[in-house]
Amino acid sequence: MRQTLRAKIIATCDAKITQKGEGVGLSFYAFFANRNDDPETLMEAAEWWIKTHQLDHFEKAVKVREMVVKGM
Image (tube, rainbow, N blue to C red; front, side, top):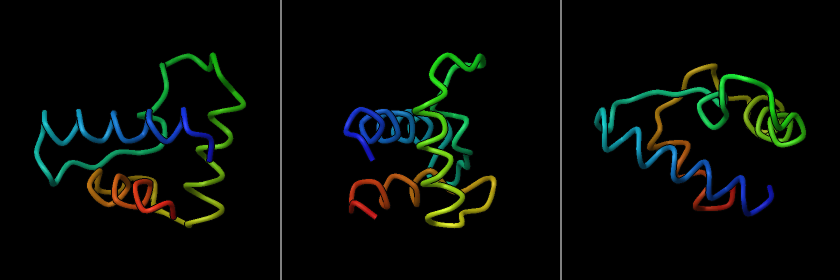
């Protein structure tokens, strides 16, 4: 996963956790604007989320953050 996407995922997870607490869930769509302005990065995130790790549609932000930090 490219470094810019890793940083975006970590920042988004941190913001959601700060706003709503450690129990907050999110999907990979949370890392993107409502319009598809970066399809290549969206597909990279989707592949990591769905194909590589077989995560559910919504996962806890703390889990996703930990996975990205550890390089999973």
